[in-house]
Image (cartoon, rainbow, N blue to C red; front, side, top):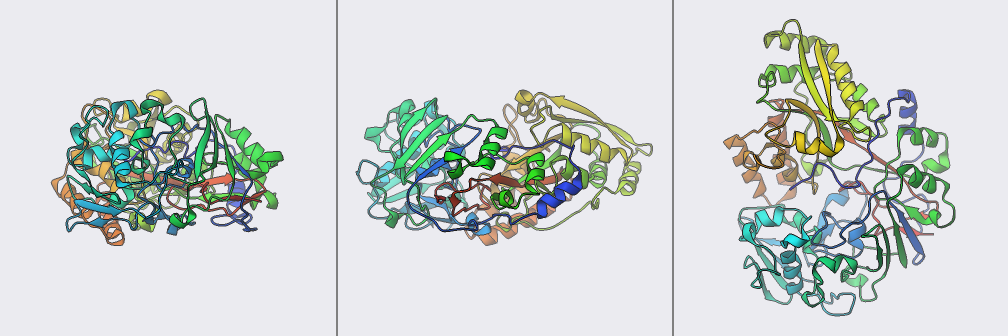
Length: 571
């Protein structure tokens, strides 16, 4: 299932102290690196340092929750497919990795067949076979190895009750290996997005003879260009060195320039950015995969062309929005939801998020990327600063000619775009339309359990959604598919919408294997759903991240907006 927060994907900034004019200057300053750095000469060798806030906890392909193959796990774990390791929108394309192509679907996309490339080897020199792929997928079902996504349990025939190979030696019959280089997956339903799913680390091969169960994370067997030679404090400090049995001839996506990659995490964001800014010693050859620059740091960079040339700009498909629970009055009245939509001051909201360098205003639920099926629409045009007059008219039609008082639940944490700064900006914007907003902060540790539970879901709250891969399916289905409503657990369908027509359309689009055709259909569905104002889109985040002075060949794609550590080189 898609996740509303990508681990380490964003350090949201809630400071509103900076003047907007400064932030506009920052957004325009210097060259923004969205592809290769200015001096793109890439050299083989050297040591790359990665400085991160969040550790690589449970470094086991079954337990990780990553897709695309461009992050740290992609150094070790190759999968059937991966993303194109190039910058920008082209980097949202699925390409073959261990497989010869992105998969051969049956007519109804319920059966997917993959053939492995010849010459694939593990770090110990043994051949990688289809049995290793099958076993790698099966062990991700083991209760002791939880943490990965639930798609496989939902999509594979027999997956719902399967408990992994430690309890069931027979394995999953829905994964067939007719020969050493062929693996076939039988699904419970049509899934045109299966090639995207096959980029997840659960599709990394694991040799059964080398499986150490819950301890596998300490030294997983590499199929990628690097192997783990050191892992301290469960992924806090790691060292990766070249896998001598990796062959570039079988891997067109990972450049693997450095000889060694030192990974250091658990660091304070300010410390990471200071070290990257100064770039002294080994920090000159350092990058970060999860630490954004904040408004004050961007303001400093605005006057420094040298620093500005070392800022990489990334876009991850994520939307922050107001969620309504129509089962709570007055949000059961569409006109009230529409009035709130008209009253939103998106200029103030973007400023509260750190300015135009760190956020762009949103009027659609789908992110502004073609791969999702982005289709421009604005059913409730508020302009840049809100349409108070139209909002008041709708409130009067709803039976509230003298205005209305509502409560907005938000995260109490200052480090979140669902936190106090955005909530306060919403409150101020709605006040102009006669809507009095009482703020209801909830502690960060409790926030998800409160807003994502049918029993405790408030009437109006701040939320976010980011897809596991760049497609409309994992973006829209968890929020609007009535069959995904969870009454006794984590529920993301805030409107608790269960419309048979919407459910049927989701099924229809899921069966489409042509991504461009499916994207257009997802965009049309997003536009239709937007008319009912079940959500109020607020903003899409932008990542601004520094890298060291000796870093070359910077690749940042739109799959997750992060610098690709498998392609970067050091001077």
